[in-house]
Image (cartoon, rainbow, N blue to C red; front, side, top):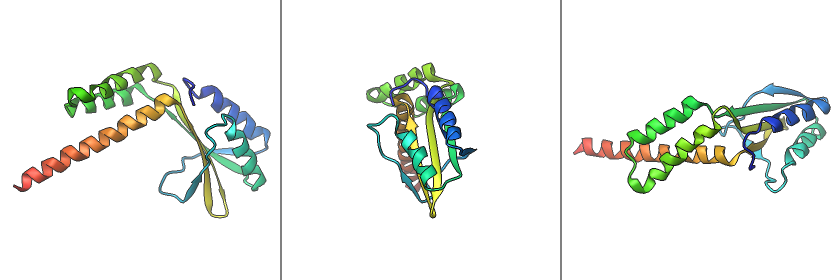
Amino acid sequence: MNSNSLLNLKDDMIAYIAGHGMRRIPAFIGDDLPSILWEDENNPDSWKEFVETAKAAGAAFLTMSEMTLEAQDIHLLIDQLQELHIPDDDSSELEHAQALMAHAGKIGFLQLGFAHQGVLFVHETSTDWYEHYQEILESLDDLSDIVFDQGDDDSLL
C-alpha cells in the first residue's frame, strides 16, 4: 500500500468489522503458528472480502494488530547501523533509516486474523515505508550475524 499512514484504513476496518456484527480482539498472529496468508495485493479493498470470509466461516471475532513506527525505534536503528560501521557503499541504508523519521508516530502495518478449523487465516497490510523499515531491520540482523560469526571465528584461533 502506498499510503503515508494506515490510520484511516484502521478506522474503516473497525467500522466494517462492527457493521458485520463481529468483535475484534487485540492480538498478533506470529509466524510460529500455522497460518494461511491472504494474498490479493492488487485489490486495496481485499480486507473487506477477508472480513466477509471470516463471517461466512462463522468466526465470531477477528484478531487485529497494528504497528506504529516510534521515534525511539528509529533512533535505535540508526545507532545500530552506525555501530556496525557500514561501508560507504551501504551508507544509503543509514540515509533511508534517517528518512524514516518523517513517519514516526504513524501506523505502518495492520494485521487481521481469524481461526477456522484449526488454521489461522491472516490478512496483512503495510505501507511502503514500513516494508522498507523491516528490510533495513533484516539486513541489520544479517550484518550483525556476520560480524558476530567472524568475531567467534577469530577467538578460536
